[in-house]
Length: 276
Image (cartoon, rainbow, N blue to C red; front, side):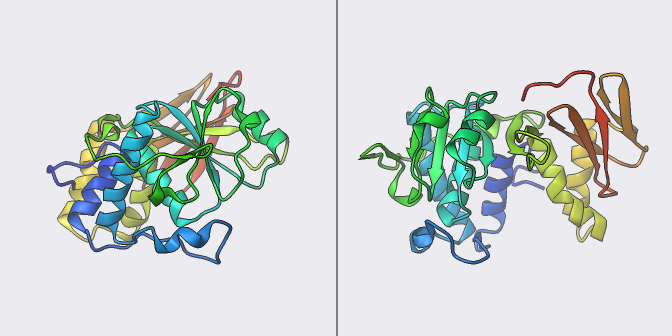
């Protein structure tokens, strides 16, 4: 349950609520060091501090033209600055495509063409404007110091309103791409509701540990509709039983439905591919 007595509707709300309820929790990157990890000392790990810093970075992004619903590609290695930038973009209300930094520029350009991002953020890799010539390009390899546009470092702005809090559950939170085994990787649309349900699945599978957990999941089910939940795709239809709630992720020509009570995935083909 959020600080305002109801479950968050979006990722920004979830981050702000968790920082308020559990300010001492830690947010960090696990695994071996990668390119650009020298920022680790300048990025805080205390959750409340991370969200505060991300809010300032979000305000800076807003000054560059990144608005709620803006499509932004985040290309980089998993570093503290990468994580901080993702949090900031959610607080700004942007729709974030997470892109493999190992892809060559030619493949990046082909992958991003249908997305047509308004901005591309780079972490631990040289900026290559040719992958999206019309987009704003920012180097956020050292995000706490401010994003870099060319040779100019943009100072972090003062925290203001958080536009991401206004995003609705079925608004797009971002995209992830397929592996590209059978061709050019395709971008999968993922909503705020998808991420919130995905995060709640382990807790639901393990059983409620408190009234808050049970109330939170019940509140989400009420907002998404009680009883049987279905997802329609072309002439095919998939659904969950009366006691389950489902959420949908659209990926190229396929639709996948996850159940919060069973971590299974079914796929239904569309009649024709849909653009992200």
